[in-house]
Amino acid sequence: MRRRPARAAERGRIRSGFHGTRTADGCVGAFQVGAIRIIASDGSDWSESGLPGSAWEYVSVSLERRTPTWEEMQMVKEWFWGPEEVVMQLHPARSEYVNMHPHCLHLWKPIGVDLPVPPSITVGLKGATP
Image 1 (cartoon, one colour):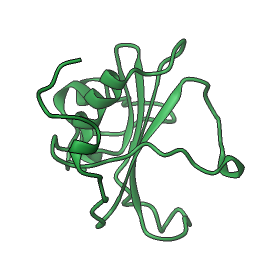
Image 2 (cartoon, rainbow, N blue to C red):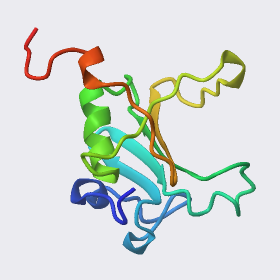
Image 3 (tube, helix red, strand yellow):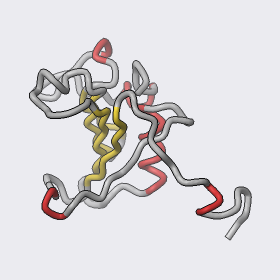
Image 4 (spheres, helix red, strand yellow):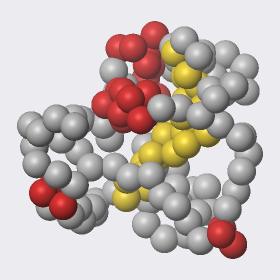
């Protein structure tokens, strides 16, 4: 995760109230960019929060009346991670579902672990148009 979010996200940082953070907090905090609401964590407080296992970086992305599009998720991904970093959306076991907001999606990256990815050819040819 970047040390600081991209300017677009930083301009939307929530600076007061329950979710208030400062620029010095880097990629930790709540952000409102247009209709997009974001909550981000760089995983630095993972163990002190009592969470099990290795730490994860995390961003939740929501809109009030609809689920974020792929393009919106990609834009937010690049606000918090570099363009060549791999992050993921997960579909957990049904027994692990948690739904706090009907239009929220999440991006995850384990800290210190290179995520495996399949070869891009399994999706299609680069440069080919539908």
